Image 1 (spheres, rainbow, N blue to C red):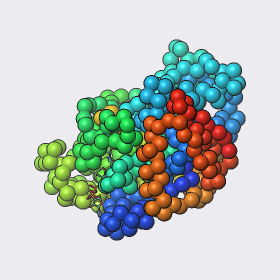
Image 2 (cartoon, rainbow, N blue to C red):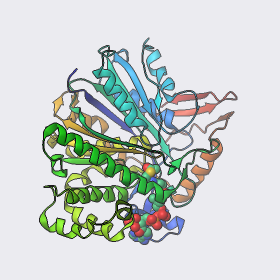
Image 3 (tube, rainbow, N blue to C red):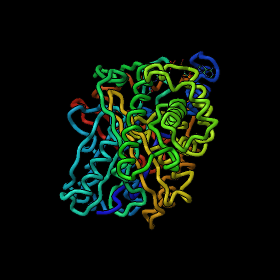
Length: 448
Ligand code: ACO
């Protein structure tokens, strides 16, 4: 199979959200801390009628319908998620309800979990399957689904929720450049979920930022090394049209891209002009440890990177800023934003993605884009995802109502023997929702 990659995409996020500006006032932090300091506009969250299973049922059903895919044509389905519900029972098995109805139970794959990286692991598995001798000619399907919620405190505004479905096959408009790829995997306690009675992670915010940037540096070095070995010339930021980052909050994405600019300056790469190189040269003698905590370097590199950031990164930031951290779906929602904004000019372009999951696992990889042919074209993917309408038709909750919802969800997490309000007035037609969890913890869902 040639040009294996993403044929089609669909995204779903809850229609319920809270404005970051309103949260700032409610939390009593200084004005601008969440909107400018973190770079976030709005945060989407599940109410008691939605969860990662309902969102993934919604997004998979919608993808199959809107691209006219026969459910019998799916041969592998992989879910990436870090939201733990039934622990031993995968989210994938819930999605089988869609396929059983059509007599298709011959679908490989289970869930992949490592913080925000599970979706990338699932994606690589599906691409590898299509490229392998066990491929049976059918499509792969990747589902990233997460509800990111944090305890009250500084991490809470970095929550979010969404599900994304990616259809995988050959001759894709979004093809993998599988040899241009670098990974960095290590042991760290930056973010993890050891308390199984709570949905909230234990998080060392500052450590997680440093781990993220160290992983980014390492992946970029690996990717450059492999590219140079293969192509016989240096790789630089000029060799890709866009850079897409896992986005816990936008400020970290700004810092990440500035970090890549600093890397290119140190490598004397052609992407950085002489004036910029001069400004960054002052920091070339810092040890790498020092460089992660040097505020002047952060400031200067972000300033130097600004024009390149506006051109190569800004078009990828819409959904992560509007929806928040979607954990496994975050990177792919950023990529979806790029398709939404630039689909008509992406043909022939290279796009580099950086996936990070705390704990930690990370990969930087490259995609080659082509216009494609209907229904698997970039233009149709943008039409189907309909990001503009989905964002516009949301309902804003007050911070008080958001906090109240979080409290209710704390009680519901891991609980049994309850029915939900079944209030689906805010959900759009075709959305799945949770109706009850019985005494045996069995979950039931309805469809609006
Ligand atoms: N106006 C403008 N900017 C402001 C204001 C203001 N009024 N107040 C603060 N800021 C800036 C700060 O200077 C800082 O920016 P800087 O980093 O460029 O200096 C930024 O806002 C954040 O302020 P901090 O005081 O650093 O924020 P705090 O420590 O309270 O929380 C954190 C931030 C650590 C990211 C927290 O939200 C968190 O723990 N989030 C979850 C962990 C996370 O997302 N990690 C990322 C990688 S791992 C993953 O994906 C889960």
